[in-house]
Length: 316
Length: 290
Image (cartoon, rainbow over all chains, first blue to last red; front, side, top):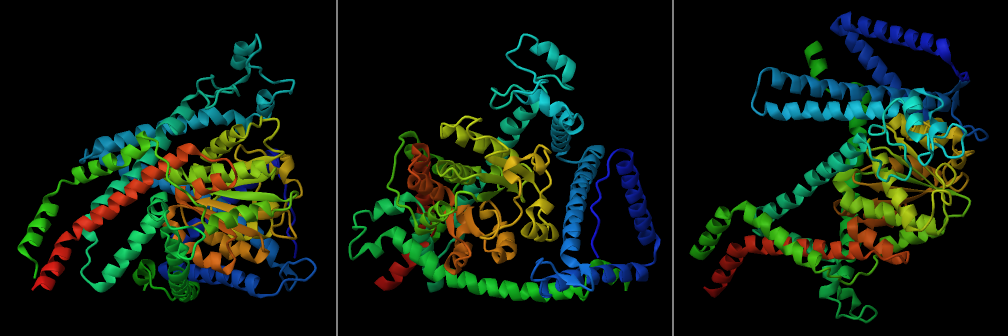
């Protein structure tokens, strides 16, 4: 069984999209109004079939010529690609769910004027600013097929920033002013509001948030790391070797030992590599095996719906 | 039992204002940064291995870079990406960027690559977007999609980060398979999270070479994969980036100075750990005296 490749355009595309939405809404409504036993059966069935598909696709040897897995004339490899693309679309919806969640939580905080409500106002201001200026800047790129020609040198429709009619062409052809969508290629970074918000505000704030970790680490260093046992002493010595061996200071401290001499193994960076490669590596491998076995057991429990979750407990 | 001196010391540490400790970190790291100190740097074997793996790529094959970092880890990930891209530019190897972890990653990677092209004294026409490199943007990493990607790049990647269909990107024409029999010889994951696990699981069977540039804290977990050969080479944090710049013959004095700052931050943490253990050392010493 081969799936035909569908390339829909224009009204056909919109009819197909509406039809798909209608079918999805119908299925959701059926599941929503069904009783718990039916819901459970649907969830268990879907989980099992999805798991079975990938189980078969992974374990059945592929056809030697096409390298595709075919069972009873059903091409599992091609179906897997379709499921992969569908999963991308479904994953896209989770962004909407995340936005709904944030708006719901922060909206409630502002409505009830709970402590810290001003932070929720900041969230809405930042969210709206990013959304408005990102969409305003890019929507012509999404919907105007001529837009790539406007910004590509050499094309007849190219809007030349050095041309005498630049300003009037921008006003006539572009859907956003230059301060919203800066198309001048020489401007790096682009001089528009979105770039200011992304490069100037978001990126620096994100980096600042992460760098605050350094201060927590130094604070924890003298409070938490106490050598009360021999094992803790071994751990501390190892940590000191790795911490110093991972930075040039470690090399500086033992730089007096010749790198090609008999004692080169005593240089801090060499000891560090020994610790990481010969001591850490087997331990990580052992942990990996443990995690792998645990993951396999967990996967089986989820596939066969043996895992107890809040929904199943509630249903039973 | 703890000695009186030890107890006093414990009390002192307990009362120590956390802000003073933080200020200490700033003061400790400032001299190397302001004085532009440079400390010796020797390239580690994982960095050398990555350089060798990149140089062994056949000229007609592509390199994919999974740029899975954002501003949070930019101190480590940005110089790593810059170093790798500059090496690829020096080697005239075409490359394609994408991201499976960070929605903001492609934009940050775009500016980083544009800057690297400029640093290599190449114009936009000499190393042209679409012909010599491309940015396929952010893709949501879920297992079904990654399985599709491992089988067929054309099936999984539809557009670049600006919605240009990949059929219009010259660099990706006929590019569909990974590994020695395909068109992509290597994938390098520049990451601030555990995205490399996807590539171990789904790209290893294609025999494509895997390279990794990760943050310092992630590196110890990856050593088993270096041993097994699943990983061709690795850059560890900022140090890995600084080493790589040296290896490719484009030393970065700024990064060397930053490394000196990081060195002193590590030293400060070691001193704080020792400081916190003074009561225990005192207790041992007094017990031995008795």
